[in-house]
Image (tube, rainbow, N blue to C red; front, side, top):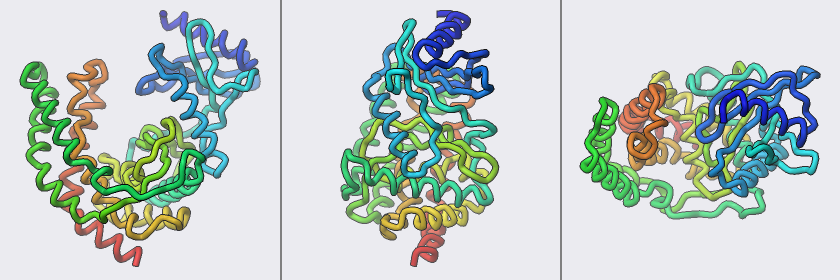
Length: 344
């Protein structure tokens, strides 16, 4: 379907299923797996329209949207979903399946990294998010072996498989060469990672979480969090992994030399918003973040898994992610000492 035809179909779906008569429909910010549009109605309101690929699991996408609504009821800043005239969260028409939410005006993603009072603002929002999702009907928080949160054995298997694939399909561009070499370096570093992870408590909290709380899915307006977007279907994962993933984003770690102090500000605000989280778990945030990066094959596998996804932005992110892992390891003791002073 051409871009012009897609715009026309989107406009038709909005009118038919949502009673939104758009005066303008244009392509919006691209998603990882979706095509997105921004529509404006006659009252000047703007709507974010997500178009799912034909291969999408719409039942899973429905559960993800329901999780977002559940978080919103707990006070988490989530864009208001627009339901169809039949009360559904996803509409199908003209060969497209779409969901519609209020457009977040004047906001930017957290891709630029955290600084100033944004650390605390993000920590507070994630704390409120996890406090709310702990009450989700899919199950309360529980304890799980730490090795399941940072699975070195699985990480080794992923990296070994990736290197075997690179051996069969040699790199054809500079980024693929770098990705293969980085995978080798990461594999060689796994014994050290395993040793580092032995210092984690035997078990860690797991609960329903956002599932993809990356800097792309956190919208900021000034020093405040404007919106949390793009939830995944409910699943139990480590909330400390999710907290570390956003407040210790690679670009933040590399751009902010004072990131241990920023981490402390975020964790302090998180604890105030979610006092049920144990001190023992909160102390693990930097170690879990470092361990998770050490065991990950992303985005080193993208040139083979999804070549079309390899953009200059992804290449830069991949290199930042690899470098940030080293920085986290080098300053791990410092970060943990700062947290220990804060939490005791």
